[in-house]
Length: 176
Image 1 (cartoon, rainbow, N blue to C red):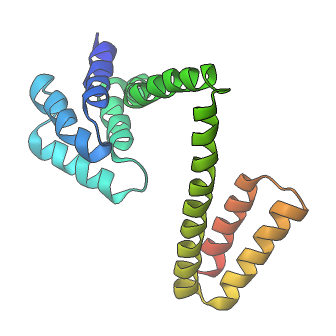
Image 2: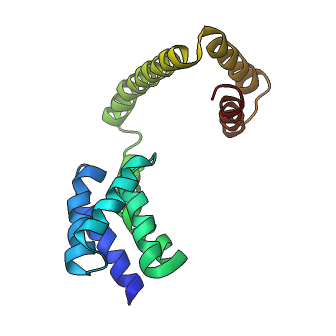
Image 3: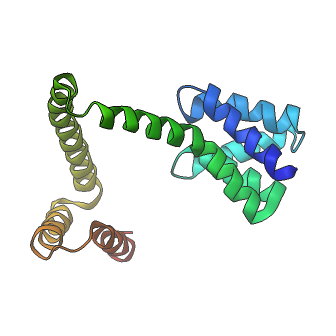
């Protein structure tokens, strides 16, 4: 029964909490503190503070922790799944609709408009990362990492996950 309660405690806020993590936090707080009485408001505040201190989406971090405390490893898995399930279901439904109308002129036009927009957003994000890297590490480190990453990704065709892991290791060893 606890796993069903964990599922509902995180699935319901995921469905009705439009706006992502910050919008679902009060809903999760209601479920965890008031409805199921798993923790006090003070404890929930501490979990929220810890979740805010770590990188990544706040709702999934809180779900994993609270699910683990209440139901162990399986509870953490159930809570994490319940947190992402509403978005997953919506994506599957919307993707099936998109695939059904993929040959429509309107969908093709929409795709032709969205692709350049995404490219520009990724380019702006890359420039911001380069600026932060330049400010924090200097021009030589930034150029070295950019050049090495380009070489490994485009010429050697190494998987991006390995390049990212290598850059993180390099940063931990030489830039900290």
